[in-house]
Length: 566
Image 1: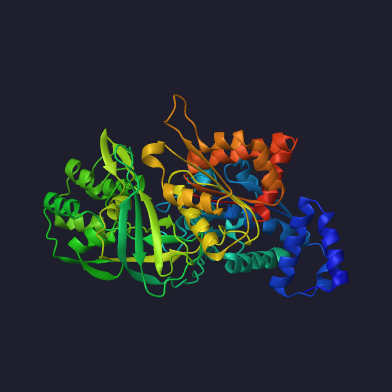
Image 2: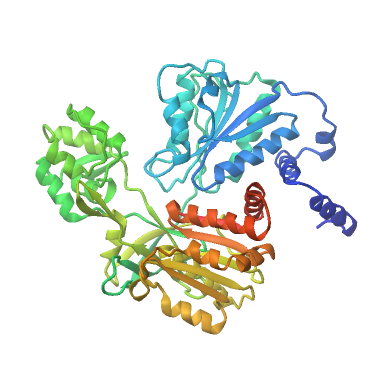
């Protein structure tokens, strides 16, 4: 703790500083702590670095890459290196051949694919016709070791830069969910290389650094309850599932990871169509497993990515247009020649990815249990209705059966202190996180005010957790609640419309220090809610659009604006 006189100076400095100055101070202090360099030595350094400017590009789904890019730019400025920070979706692609020093920070999305915001950049560097022979670069890849294609996008960006003639400043760094330590270590290494501009990694050097193992604990629990929360006549099936497990540990805001099994009927049909023996053992990822078990428990056979369909075409020699398709449909339309060809195909397929569900329970209110809220997902292929793999699997769980799962921590989605206020926007299954939040605050007697915005299609059939929400209102846990049911009137009514109806009070709450949370579908819900929040800040705060956006950015930096979207 600082002495009182130092604390006063420190607080006065913060109050009188702008956003850019605060970012610089944050990066500066972070650099001092990481490198353990005495402050006086850093301040008095006057030698110009060998490299005076760099470009940092980021591709992100959740905002982590963007935050790291801003932090690293501040640290670079401390070392007298100017850093231009730009999102991959905003980067001018024609500038790439002119770049000399470039750092790329990119996450991996879905089945090893680039984030939507990074796809244009990713596609550009994979097109032929240009060279990057003057480029010196390094890549920081963010990912999650729970997924089979961990940091795949970062690996491919690093490899492609190298193929185009670039030279590595530092090897590829792959980071798991707990990324801060590895990311800072990587950037300190980059800065060290830039200080001399001579320590480039030879092109032949393998560009990998082993990821830190997280050692996620796999829990074996018992299904206690499974209930469809939607009433008769609803267009949806939303299942509330309760699982008990010994030694269970999690926090509100975390997620449950479930690895689903493929439908037995589909597996048996694949074996019949391919004319293969399901009991035969083959090797998959250094493990000997029967073909039946491989199809049932190990590999993804539903809605294969375009990359895997292309791989299927190459193995079978078939001319298959770019598309996504189930393995069974591929086998029916483009049959394999024999069992050996089928074995080659399945041995190269992706492992089943775990699905994450934001926890709907509270460790204080539901000790020893974790609750999941999952809507049965539907999609259409060739005018045929299909169902999501994991949501269907969960909908068919039987009470008293065993279910394995793991906990995925989410440090970026945490409740504020007990005495702080919060506004929660969670339509549909987004209510899961806020059932967790409110249950915890109820159980612990937190004094902060709570305001919930919830929405779905129909009041009569789709008001998830209606009784609990009403009880929280009656007992004072919920200070305010506003609901929007989009199909109960002749016009569509959504949660953002309810926010606008209470714009003055929403602004009063956040301007007085309340935290603002969004949970649910990313597109279009979270985008519409964020745009509405900016509009409210602009109008009620009498600000320009740019000032309103900066206000929201500052809330995010302070940890008062957080999203858990999918």
